[in-house]
Amino acid sequence: MIEEIGTGIYRIGVPLPDNPLRELNSYFLRGTDRDLLIDTGFRNPVCQSALEEGLRTLESDPARRDVLLTHLHSDHSGNADLFALPGRHVYLSGTDLGYLRQFRSGAILERQRARYLAEGMPSALEKEISAVNPADNQAIEQITDQFVPLRDGDVISVGDLSLETVLVPGHTPGNTVFLCRRQGILFSGDHILFDITPNITAWDGVEDSLGDYLDNLNRIRDLPVKQTLPGHRGPGEFRPRVDELLRHHRRRLNEARRIVEENPGLNAFEITAQMTWQIRARSWDDFPITQKWFAMGECMSHLDYLRRRGLIRREEFGGMRRYYASL
Image 1: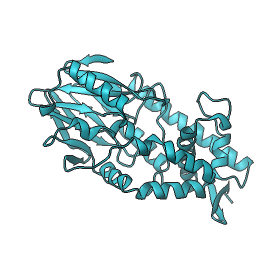
Image 2 (image 1 turned 90 degrees about the vertical axis):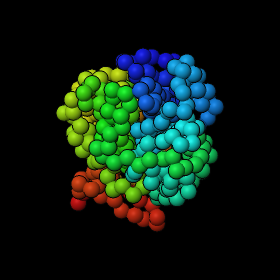
Image 3 (image 1 turned 135 degrees about the vertical axis):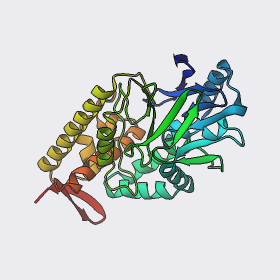
Image 4 (image 1 turned 135 degrees about the horizontal axis):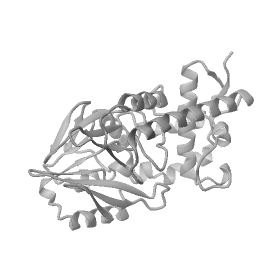
């Protein structure tokens, strides 16, 4: 469960029950004046007990521990307030902190659900997903005054490590990675994963999530990174993986465009069902229901990208959005 990555840097494996991600890489950084915990798992007893056990083994003193979140997703932020005592800090980008507040109010979820229905998801399926979606029912319960918003370029120091905040919207609107320039270490969260591909969904209030993601892959490609510590699964070579992720999305964009051109008038739910997915399911009908939500969100982000560049068009009939080749 615990792996020493380098001097004063430890990985705590936090199980994610009934989730294809399987485990979160939570990182504990031991400093001189304070310690830092990066990402905290879903808000459920399994994640909480695993993280508590790991921190006990590392003899982490809660009175000197702050929490740093790479982004707002519940598998990273769900337990944040439980592992920061009153008076300690929880750091998160200001953009994602704003979205997290809206999630807790229910405003964003309602707008997201409305879009999924307009894009073709059956109402019964949407209701079934909403009842079990861990993004909602295993999320952080309250946003306190412990939360400190981060901006691009802000630095958090822990011992010999200076973590530079690099804002990389895409995976979430305020997604961040943290670079220790002197050591060449990048805490990449879910911006760069090696064994799996980060999910890029269509976010409420964001016109082109995929375009943002691709722009920010290019933005950080030449950072002085020697070691990448991702949010899930194993590490890998930084720049080759950036290039592979760029190629991956070019292939996905070509696939989505081809489906639209060959099948004019499909909605996003129908297009999603025809796309290629690397998941343990025999067909779209056999997909785990929460994965249908994430797959459709990713499909919509690719359709948004193509539509904004005039490569496809969208029309609406009776409240249903359908896609066609460009005129």
